[in-house]
Amino acid sequence: MCLAIPARVMSITGDKAQVDFGEKVLREVNVTLVDAKVGDYVLVHAGYAIQTMSEKDALETLSLWNEVLDAGTQ
Image (cartoon, rainbow, N blue to C red; front, side):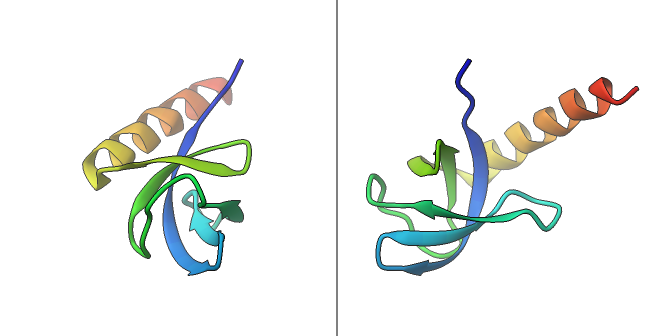
């Protein structure tokens, strides 16, 4: 199963970006496949940003992920 998770771009250096998946989870991802800027939301799969997305869609998707994760801990 493949999963892609939204993240917010915090900084960009060359082809790499520091992204925030929420709750202080920061990772470096490759952004060569998208035209992302600091503050944008991107969809991340396997270390690559594969699509930019609206803040509304990203936050809605993250909220749904949190519901799934919370259900798994109960």
